Length: 298
Image: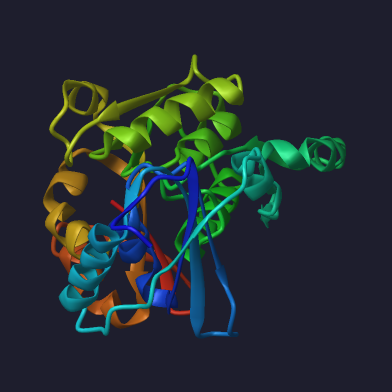
């Protein structure tokens, strides 16, 4: 094979540990045509598969994977890279993704609209999300845990000023807007994620409610002017959750709730301590596999 692969569409695949899926997805490509990750060994390895627009340089992909692996003290995963025949591979790939049901939420792709309509008639809250590789389409335990938390919170009280911090594909912002029909700010530092969130808001006819913006933390006027929030959801990673604890607490209204996810069970104590030190207290703790979702109140 030549160093530069010139087919129109290529399929890249790596098998990695479950806990490291997001890092290897980001390392492999930040703007794939399509991306899917799924468990192939119960509680163990996951397959990360992407469709990439050619031309691609195998050595560059392997270099990014090796660097990501080294950062996590892991061996570099072998890369499978194959050219694909001329076909609508994006649509075919998306059709392979199953819907997700979390509490009353039914998160699905365009290929499952018929099932979604049936679920809606039964009282489900349906959300159509095409995530690509913008994180947060409901399939990962952290997003799933946040959806369960939102479903529970909606049965307890109504929120009027929610924020989705680190929105990814925007599914949590969509969920909050659909639950309470209120203006919802959604932010992410990744411009690709912001574009995907905007597209998903339009797709669900929620573009009048959900406002995705590009921001690192609270560094955007839309986030400061929207404060104080009565509900902040942050599905990111443990270190950013700790770093943002002062800002999250400072932008939260008295009596407000915070839903945190993206942290492992072993990271519970240090993340929780960062928020307890800011005057918040733990309300509920959910564990799904190795991942936690924390609900705190001010």
